[in-house]
Image (cartoon, rainbow, N blue to C red; front, side, top):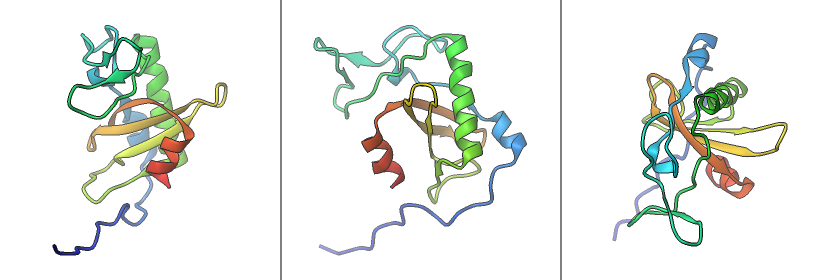
Length: 139
C-alpha cells in the first residue's frame, strides 16, 4: 500500500473577513441537530430511549437546543463574534468563510462549534460542544 502524505490540516492564514462579510454571516441551523420542531421545520435528529442523540448508520450527533427565532438570532451573534475574534479554521476547499468556527459564551462558559454550510454566503449550523471536542478540531 502506498504511503501518501496527508493533506495539510489548515491552509496558511487568510486575509481577515471584512466587517460587512461578518455582519452578513448567520446561523441557519440544521435539522439533523434538532430533536424538536424549529424555525426550519421538522427535526431530523434522533434521540434514543436513553436520551442520547444518534443518527442511524452514522456517527453520534449532538442535539442543538436552539429552536426559536430569538435563539436563531442569538446563534447568529455567536457566529459573528467567532468570526470577528478569529476563532476559525480554514481548509483548502473553503471559499470566503472558514469551514469551522468556535465560540465560548462568557456568561455560561458553554462552547459552541460551527460548521459552514455555505462558504460564500457565510451560513452556519452549530451545536454545543465540550473543551475536548474544541481542542480536537482547532488544536
